Length: 222
Length: 246
Image 1 (cartoon, rainbow over the protein chains, first blue to last red):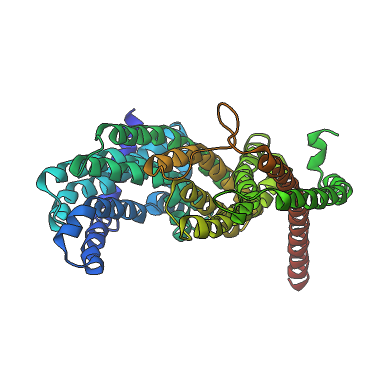
Image 2 (image 1 turned 30 degrees about the horizontal axis):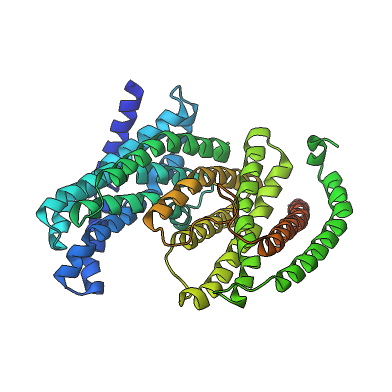
């Protein structure tokens, strides 16, 4: 448990310092959302209707952005080998890295999403709901992305491949995230079912993601 | 002959060379028979002759899904037993499965034009087949990226298994997202709703497509083994040259 916390702390510290990518995701999220009205036109009614979908799509793309750094830097400086040989099970170590990644890139997205919602004319009441769905859903994005990050570091060519591998797998998260947000704002479907499924997706990927990612690292880097 | 004996590529190639002509002949015959039955099948009272597209569309969809099943089985072989043939089987199955999925999408789109009035609708089944196609492309991209075939196949094996876990979830969520398509009508409780005059040719075509899949798969596995031999020969040649030069 101590090792887990230490690893999380180390990764968060690295992400916050110079050269880390902590705030980059949030900045990218901001830019994506700001670009949307330029493409769609400044019609506030339209933006209010599709606002939750824009926020979700922006968060999805932003969470992909820093994923390839998740293992790549550790692989370069050799600390990944130390983690693989260390006493901590690789699954747990990998999960710790994912948690740190989520805290530094996922959480800022959720925090700034109400402000961005304001710019998209999403109702004040609905903004909390969108943030809540992001809070429930972004862990799933991180833990699914974890598998892609492990696979691409094993092949030494991350970047584009990562997005190609990960994006199709995130479709269920996107569907239920947007559905839950829309259900709370426009109705008439109830908010409960999609939201609980979203939570289930996050929990399931929390369990399965580290196992698959650890397997990918073991098989890829031996 | 036990499965472990097939780990020797030469033995496997001998077996393939013996089996492949027969399998090819059976595929051709069954396709001829199935297509003839399909052409003689009665037209649909609403859709007319366009219902004939179904005889290609539905088997292609089944085989597209089965391709992922073959890849997942091969992935288990790669990761659990380290069977060298499983590497080759997984790699050979990916483009074939993708091709069947693509045929399913194209024929579906051509079928949709006269019946629904548009080439593409975002309905649940079309969309989940499209996602399956994207996943196939991802696996193929992974194979392309890997420099070392062994490492690439282990990575792709893990991706196949992750996909196998995810595909039902994706299917469920896409169904939930949009339930516009007609519900499943061949396999369901209380028997099929399709008339036997259409169902029999459909099943014959399904068997023919399955044989086609395995014919192509075996041929692709043979090609992949030969390709790997060429690769290792080239590497040896390059090494000899380098040693001669040094």
